[in-house]
Image (cartoon, rainbow, N blue to C red; front, side, top):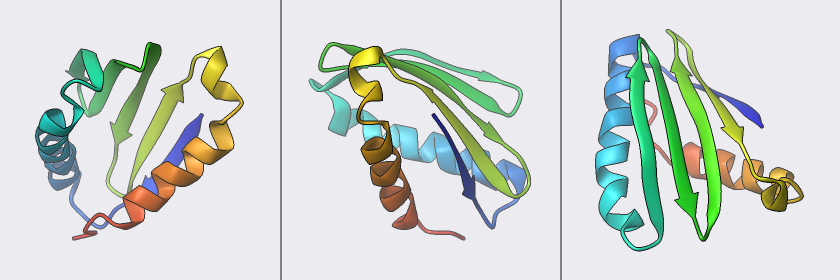
Length: 98
C-alpha cells in the first residue's frame, strides 16, 4: 500500500516532524505494539512493527513537497487495505501542516 502525503515544510522540518510524531507515539503504543525496526537511511525512515501479532513493515520517504508512505501488510490485513488507507489519511488530515 502506498500513500503520498503533501506537506508545507522544508524537507528537514518534515523529517523533524516525523521524529517528533514517533517520540509522541511511543508511550501510546506501549503494550499494544512492538517497534522492531526504526532506521533512517538518508531521508527515508525504514520501520517494522508488530501489532496484535501482525508484522507490518514499510518506509516513509521525505522530499520537499510530500511524504511517500509505503506499507507492507500481512495477508490477514490486506483485505482491510482500503479501510486502513482511509483511516491513515483521516488521521494525517488532523496533523498541523505548518
